[in-house]
Image (cartoon, rainbow, N blue to C red; front, side):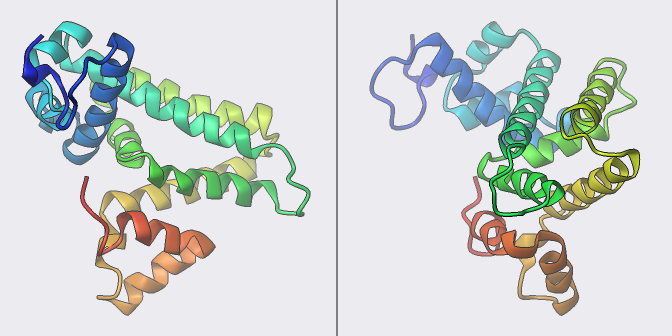
Length: 207
């Protein structure tokens, strides 16, 4: 094992499982920033602080890595949604709890943007199929576990895509420069706006 196989600041050996999670976390950011077509395994390796051949040995191809990243992002989303299902006893409506859970994913760098990148890759024969199935899995959750009516599902998914677009175009990073943009963000993110700005706003550190 060479020093380039270790992340910056790491002095000991990582287990294969930890190394895998390290690469997936880095790849989530890289794919979120550059999309599937624009990202490279070399960029992922640099972001993870390891060698590019190691990434290839572990995941095989960029396509397989992207699919794992996409499925991991979907899994994280559904996990947050399921955690928000139990009634907290405060009278908060379910749509609001699920919306807050979706926004809270800003604490997982790159997840929102990776999902958005996947959902606009429908023309790719492999990724497109996986993205469609992933989106339908969100629909199934809302229908079968959250017990939303069709109109609720449509409204909720539309709201989620609005949030994804605002994060995808990095509108929070411009907060304070445009009254209209600020108004849109406040309306969309609501009481979660401050948390979003802390993570993705003008003073937030780029990952």
